[in-house]
Length: 65
Image 1 (spheres, one colour):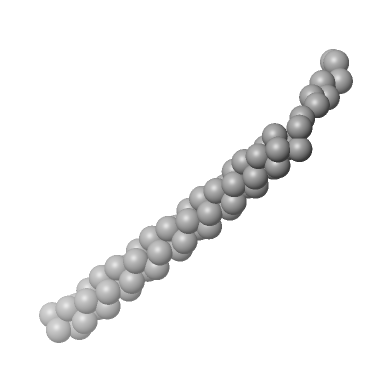
Image 2 (cartoon, one colour):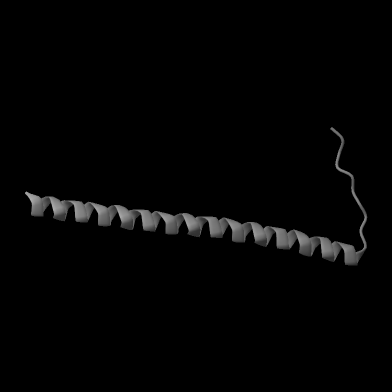
């Protein structure tokens, strides 16, 4: 496998390339955090729904019996 080619850049191009890479990195972090928060929220809602259903079921069962 050949070594990666070194490309010469002007300072302006190097700054633009670095900013683009930095933005890509931040966008990736934002996406990761967003996905985590969405999963956390979905888990919270599911837990709340299961808890309410169980409580209503048990209260209803107690009233019937």
